[in-house]
Length: 422
Image (cartoon, rainbow, N blue to C red; front, side, top):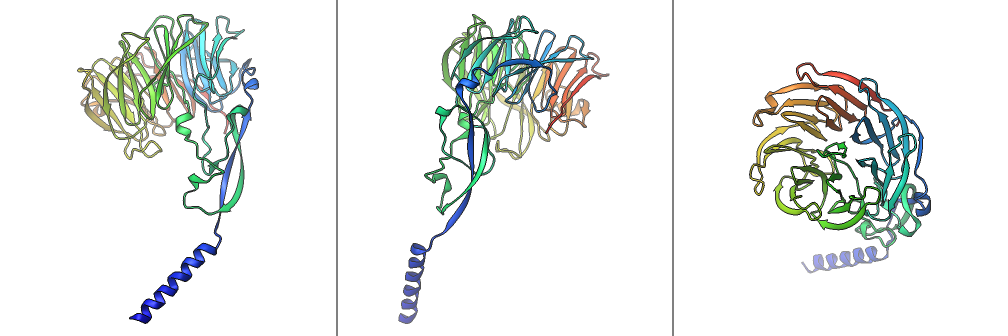
């Protein structure tokens, strides 16, 4: 027994000596930021001739014009006076842009950390008339695998990355590597979007909203807070306050003096009786998932998308009873494939189910929505919709589609603007 114990001690000492003296190395993929200076950022907005849509993002409608975001590059302007024959007329180059909203003849757009105001009274001569600088959180674009190298925000905004590899002494947790701090991309990112409002002079957007207009206020969310801008002087937005909401908030939808905020953990409801000072009313919690929300009458409709970084396993459509606004409750769940945006026009519900296409339901009976599928367009990719009474705008990776649904039993495709790129 003593021999065995002595042998064990000798072996343990040898292992300790080996672990202390042997050098173990690891190779890291390093993402090195490429910067655009603040001076270049703030002198780069320009009106160009029409360009083909390459990577469509958010969608917005005002009067006879459709605005399509080209992700982080700018905005395509589409003349839609004839929905059966829309004309791509111009492109507004705006670095870092992901969304827009329109009040009167002023278009508001984000440009990385800035908020722009663009005069669109003459669509052939658009002009930047105001810029509120550094009003949004600093954006760190997704860099996929690897580590973000040292960040220097004084150099400007990040417009991309170059990749290198570095071999260092191995450590148990590379997130603590002194050379490569892991910045929280989610906290800094502002993935802005717009939403639908029924108010004179204000345009209409989709459900993937991070910006929305209500009365004389523009609301914008980052991952945790609601930002308020007074736009009573449409040419000169004024930041008024920031309200902490929750972690991982994602979308905005104003409805009847209320603001519905979709978060990965649930839905938050705020009163807009005083638009300058939104007040918390209630919260509905659900499993962690990405979740745009739209509202009609006593019901809120929420899509939860699973199989992604949002955390959920299952994908579904939730119908929430909000007849008692202080105590929203789940009424019904419906399985989906990979739902994104959705829209509601009275009792007609439009759901963008990703690669499973566009689904249109009669939602007059919220307990039997899946029994009342009116149409299913399977051969398209669907991201978000804007129902406009008789015409539906639908954006996806395949492009912009317009449907005439004035006769819900005979829905017709009016037009399609294709996406080119990648």
